[in-house]
Amino acid sequence: MACMAEHCTQAAAVRLTGLRPRSILDAMNASKRTRSALVGLCLAVAAPPSGCGSPHAVAPMSSKPAVGTLLVVNARLWTADPNRPAAEAMAVRDGLIVAVGTRTDAERACPGAEILDCGGRRVTPGLIDSHLHLVSGGASLSRLAMRDLADRRAFVDAVAARAREVRRGGWLLGRGWSTDSWADPSTPTRDWIDPITGDVPALLYRMDGHGALANTAALRLAGIDRSDVKDPPGGTIERDATGRPTGILKESAIERVAALVPPAGLEEQAADTIAAMREANRFGVTAVATMSEWADLAALQRVHADGRDTLRVAVYVMESDWAAFVDRVRSMPVRDDRLWIAGFKAFMDGSLGSRTAYMREPFADRPETRGLLSDTMLAPGRMRANLDAADAAGFQSAIHAIGDEANHLLLNLYADLAARRAPRDRRQRIEHAQHLLPDDVPRFARQGVIASMQPLHKADDGRYAELAIGPQRARSSYAFRDLLASGATLAFGSDWPVVTLNPMAGVHAAVTGRTLNGRTWMTHQNLTVEEALSAYTRGAAFAMHREHRIGRLAPGMLADFTVFETDPLSIRPDDLAGVRVASTYIGGRRVWPLD
Image 1: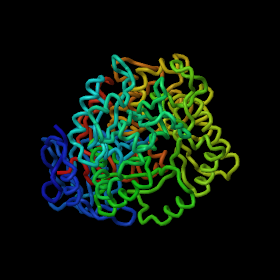
Image 2: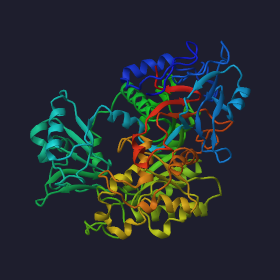
Image 3: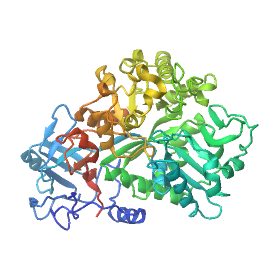
């Protein structure tokens, strides 16, 4: 049974009850009812925190608990703090941890506090997702989900069912398809879906987001349904043997169609954001680094201003006009421990699945190509200029690089920037860092570059990576162990909505090396459970310059923590993906479950 409790003004400790999903509207209303006012830098929690009792809950020490205080007792704390890695109790006052140690230590720090009896459950720092797409992830919850479609028939049937629901003038949008595990891995074409979509424009993103299928209606609206249309810089419009576009678009070519999709209104985006936050909370996530467009920021600010946020959000904004970037950041009404702009995001290349990752040598199964450099890289000096501008403004760089040559070139750019500019704590990030040249692995630690990686991608790519790049190059793919051994910082995330947001699925992949089809791959790069959890806590906090606020359970840190129904540190590694979260707390306030 999952761990939840009544508000502390109603009862000090109650029995455990089951988790259950909430609708977006219910979540919005419940959050609005229970949200405490922000004070200062959102460090104070105005209302007393909720309790979480076991069937044998401990009674409160006082009939009138101290306002804004909480004792976490009867817990097995894994703190991610090397100074005190384990403890049995923790005291929280005004959203901050004030003591970690024995129950006596905690009671002495907060006499008369509300009691959260965890029934011997495992408690960890709140989990941090160091790379996802928060607002679009929330939107994906209401779009056509295509990840589990197993063959062409299922693909076509799913599109047909959704097409019948699309209103006049609307678009059919979906995401998540991949043919890599199909018995017949033929690439979909517009001919598959034209008969069932008709005049309804459709844009269906591949699982990795670097490829998409558009039907004829969408291609025609974009003016790219003809054989004489040229590929855009940094993108590909796939064609059949006659030169006719097949409907498959890669990288920047997708934008030719995506730009025509009517943008969601602010209220719809705010609802998507709230849904995304609830999704994160139910998996024990308390903070995220979101890779976002500028348009997402308005929704994030609205949810924050309305007091409906249940997540700490570091925003990495896609590259843009730098004068406008700096001006907009300076004019932001919100910059606190709940929402802040951390840096900028850009792309070096594409993805392995779409064969657009930029490799030093051609793909083993596509010898005619080495992949694609982004349009940013194709413009001479543009990436270097963007990195310089971001650095001059004091922002962190978080650059997508997947192919071995893309990672090599980015490490060179980072080294060049550090050599030319004044020393400072840059913490430059490489997002994904999936395929590395062996000599580049130790450069991460030497240069202080953070490897922001998504272990569940390994579980996916492991099904076909050796086919794509051969077994020798695959040896230094997803080099978790080698990077950690060399002294690099690992920060783990999901890349949601590309894959599930659930961090325990990522821990399972990092620890077992098991792929989505049940095999194991590159197990010499496996981590321990503690190492993987560290990458989702302490490492992820360091990657967003918040290691002194979140990522550890220690005095002075924000009281963000996760209570597990099943202990990830004591079960079989193969069972890690099924670990459930009992409750999630941010600043000492329970955000999951909500009632």
